[in-house]
Image (cartoon, rainbow, N blue to C red):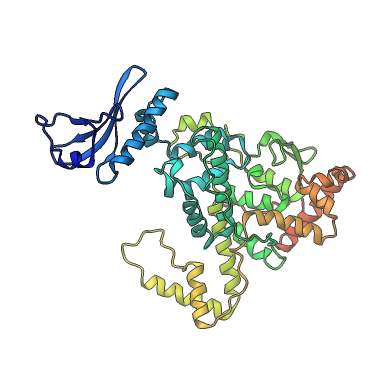
Length: 463
């Protein structure tokens, strides 16, 4: 029987119980109308693929017209006949699909693990991508989705927003190669206008350093305290210093070998007198080769930690505490600001609930102090909480420049990989580098109010 609109409208379920009831069309082989006890009607297509009999639903009658369903059925049958395809299996595969969580896992395993910035990729994926798109199918992510995320992050962190979009773009370029999406699938992170970026030029001034030095010495974490001083004295990159090992220290030459640097080549970091004195004063952890030892994952057993000793990883939290302490010290030097902070602290203490946690901190957050100062027209002294950890490296470069050292020598000290100056670096011997860092160490210690001497440890040890 050739299906028509009239026959379809008049058709009623005639099956036994819930048995399948189908009216087959004589115009298109395998095409029919399935009737349900509820009165619903759907177009179906029956075919054979790899010797198996298959039946797939094309769509609901009323949503699709008879002509639309017939055209779709012919197209699917053509795939079966000419390509040996199985449309139902393809549909099920697409419905299951791979999610953004699957793509992120593959990206971290196959790509990020080979990058020096893999930890940053992991952080951005955990913070921005997975919470928003974890269960979303990879091929369902749209440019609007990516642009909305870019805008949301950019409201407070435009640089971070740009980095996240660059990461998504790279992931989708690789997704095509890994067959998460078809080769011609559009990259949803393309053609999104990035936020304008201005190169940072923040470094610590001679006026700011004493307060920061005092705040570092007040930090309770001994390892983090030593790390911050080493950043100030050497200008080393964050990860390169965190992964430094005791067996790479050459005490006779006054050098620290950094085997895995950003430019992919080993670098011998000259150590000034204060830096060497600091290293000599630091205790070593049995079985742990790292200069800055860490505790390892919280879930790791004592045996696991012994087999795979860890280095310090989370230095951002101690650094945030140090910056807050230094900023409060700077503000308290202004009488009006000090009075405001005392008043807010007192109010916060009075409002403390008796069941508040023991770790309750009466001093209000910096943003709360800023808001109160703005409301009362009090101008706060310059804060230090805008200084990033990488700015300590900039501080070394800036202070070396202010001391009259050439840009090429500064590049040598900081292990810059600018190919245009590589040949010029060759003119500077290690003596020039060491001399520059010795002078820098003396200036840092002097500005911090510590007598510059190779025999003086630049940090105070806690009992």
